Image 1 (cartoon, rainbow, N blue to C red):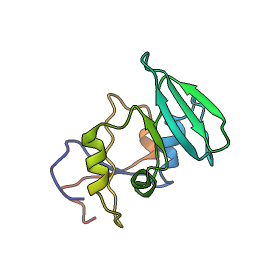
Image 2: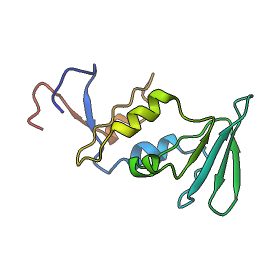
Image 3: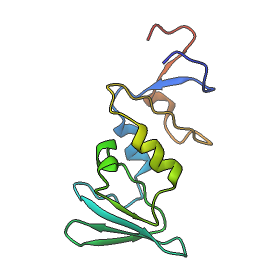
Image 4: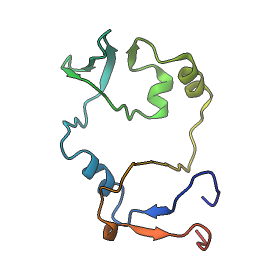
Length: 125
């Protein structure tokens, strides 16, 4: 937590990550509890996602939030396949008990009042 790898301050979301994800997803079509079997990208860059019930969703972009275990099991077929570098990284990663997520945004779109700021140099966290 205390390193100088990234510039800027550290923030905690006192009401959980949903503060961030709800804001980011406000105008998006989000599907929950919909297991995916394949993700195909055509030559034009259009993405087609197929669920385990054969329902199909088409989009310009897709964010995949599959767990490491799902990615390792090849439960989701990617066409074209994920880059070799990504496949190699997935194969080498192991499950752990701590995750640190770093997100960079060009500008603040959130209310400053909804975040708790921690100064990394003076924090004991």
